[in-house]
Length: 428
Image 1: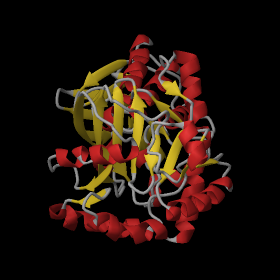
Image 2: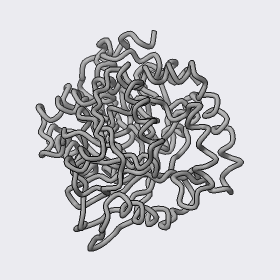
Image 3: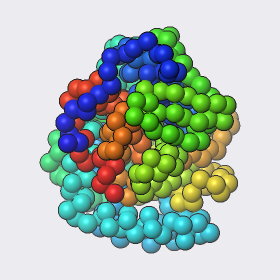
C-alpha cells in the first residue's frame, strides 16, 4: 500500500507528445529540491512557480533545521495555553477575527488532532522524517555543494523562569525516549556558552544535533542553479487547472499548456487548491508567519536561540539577525500587518540586552499547516504518476531534503526510505 514502493515512472524517454517527463509545481525549498533530485536522476524536469524561486515561505523562514521538534502542534498542553497566548498584549498567536468563520472547521480538526493517541502517532511520524533530515542535506552538500550554508553547530532553547526550567527537564525526558540528544545548561554554564544572552536567564536546553541555514533563500536559489546546470527548466507561470489523463497530465497555466508524464504538487499554502481539482481534500490552513530582519545587529546569539516563554527564535544569518516566531491565523488574502513583525524587536532586546540594528525589515509569509502537523507526501491514490509534497508547517526547511529524496524514490519505483503511510493524503 502506501508504505511500499510505487510503480514509479518508466525510464526517461524521448519527449514526443510531452513537454517534460516531470513537472514540479512550486519553487520553494520542497519543490526546488525535489526538482533537483529528479533532474539528477536522469528525468527531464520542469519547475513551475507563479513568482519564481524562493519567493514565498522559503524566503523568510527562521533557517532552523529543527530535528529536535518532534511533537505535533496540537496537544492537550498546547491547547490549554491558547487562550493565554491570544489574550496576551504581545502574544505569539493572533487570529484575524474576520477570518474566524472560515477558520472554524480547521480549528475543530486541530482540536481533534490533539487526542493523546493521535499525538503519539504524530510524534513517531515526525521523528521518522527528522531522523533522516540532516543526512539528506549532507547528501545534497556532498553531491552538489551548498556554499557553506549548512551550519551544524546546534541550537538553544532558553528559559527565564523556574517553571520554564521545570518544563525543560520534563521535555528532556520525553525527547530522550526518541533519541534526541540534549544538554541542560544551568545559568552559569549558559553565560559561559553565550555571553551575549541576557544574564538573568535561568538556564537552557542545548541541542547539539540540530543545525541551521545561513540564508534560506540563498540555499533554495543555490539548489535551483544546480538544477538548471543539469538541464532543468524553470518557468514562471501560474498553474490554473490540472487535467489528468491515462498517460499524461496537462497543466493549464496563465501562458499556455504543459504536457507532462508525471506531476509533483509542492505549492505550499496553495497546494490544496490543486489537489482539490483531482478530487482530494486536504484541510490545509495558513499560518501567517512574521520575521524582523536586522542588518548590522549590535548583538547576536552564538547559535539559533529560542526564547521558550516568549515563543520566538533569534537566528544569526549571513545578512544579519533574524527574529521570527509570530503566528497569525488569517488566510491568504488579508494584508500583512508590519506591527506583528516589529513587535519582535522588544522581545529580541529582552533576549539580547542592548540589541540594535542599522536597519530593520519586516516580512510575512504563509506556512502551509495541516491539523495533525504532518505533511502530505506520496502518490495520489487514484492517479498514477501524480505525487504530493506539501503541508510541512514549521518544518518545511527541516524536511525539504528528505521529502525530495522520498519523492525521487517513489518516482523511480524504489521502496521509500521512510514508511509513507502516516503522510498519505487519504488520511483525511
